[in-house]
Image 1 (tube, helix red, strand yellow):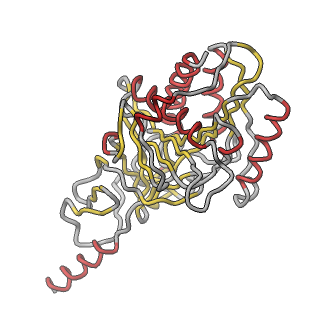
Image 2: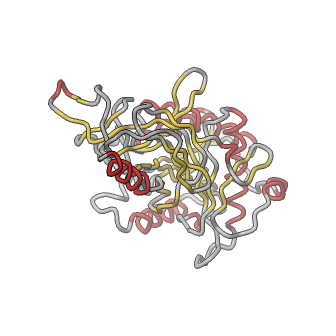
Length: 340
């Protein structure tokens, strides 16, 4: 019997999948080093360079056993799985220079020092004329209502309530930009509702309409949230900023590589994103995960000032995401002032 249990445990360990990250609708292997905060009675895996490394003993049963606090609503609703808090160390990135940390999965040759030295050609002025567009390809992405170590069936990762989804996050960022004196438009069109398929086609149409109506727009920011899971467990990415928990954020940039065409000026967008990442790291160390460069468009080919930023995951609380939005807004204003 003991041998059978040992064999079963080995199979259970082997079956644990590498966590996956949803980058703007694209699943990529979660390959960044993390620090793990979970119960010592459960199996713990550290993830580094895309491989699972078993670092503690597993329980005799491979079934997920949520903590005793994981029965919600006065015992009326049972947890479906755990929420595990992790912090991704930006310095775990394979590429780094000058406060910029990057995971390059595009296949393109990228030298951070050279790209930073090239600078950003965008020039802004403080004016009510729209210069920044904030929008959401996946507007209905949402968060847990409060910070906890479990999730239930009623904790939907989508919401059409703009007070609970990405529109609420965009409102905070836009308010920061407007208060700093820069003209900003925040579009809250739900491009992923009632159907998720075709979201980028619909958001492309929205962006092009704004660019045609307001030729003064120079920067377009598509604000998303991430999703990260391992089996029935969900992961929230969180760090401590000034004594308060903030959802970690990540810049995701496309490139004209592999099968991607029609995006010859992608490095101009990358340079802007690098400057933004550098500003985030300077003001709020550990808030930003390593930025990702992929062989994708993400509609960033529409301008030479496009960025996609992911704020937290579906397991972060709305409060953690809102706090991050404040910090992101502050860093964005600092960047815009540099371009003024």
